Image (tube, one colour):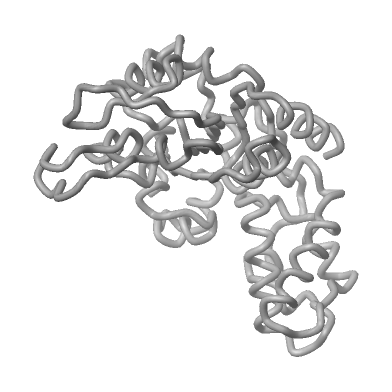
Length: 299
């Protein structure tokens, strides 16, 4: 984590574009926020956009804005995310899911530092630092023709890789203490601690949902634990009952993600809703990933 922090400090001081890569739940948005907070733009806005959460029919308007009357329902002008981030940082999460037909417009916006709202013809200057993130292998997407190579090289001036939680079990104790302190402040109660047996289970678990899953598990324990010390029985079932055998390291980001989803589907008996809850993601997003990785036979 020292290397990660030093990389964040180095890129924060400079106006270069940053691509953050890592599995879902590793804290890519938090890394982007730290880049913003430590930069000269810290007093400007930080505007996060999750590209997968926006319907394809609306993403152009959400990014670049629109003028009144541009389409049905456009009852007033809207600035869009780029203009909302003017003077600050625009964080485009899951950039690999931006439709191919919009990538050319996104590239022009980045190169020219201007946007053309939907329904307009006049470009509007914007001054926003672009930070992007993905849990996909953009290189593979470029080779398969699903992502523009020129946009890819524009975005990846500096790449920051956020390791999965299973790659850094030594950080689990510090992350747990930090989260428990934050939960104590939120619930206005004394901070709890993790007992030795529960701590061993946390360190042995494979964490398919990464830091997000760890934080949710600790909040689950805080809500239900009757004592100041979190014990084994206070943890979620999937952590208490997880096998102790170590999982093999993934061959690549995409291969590791496919293995995690396949394992969750098997544990959930093929039930996508249950698997989505285990992975702490929306069901529709899990379904897209099942199709992407050819795992339909497990459902």
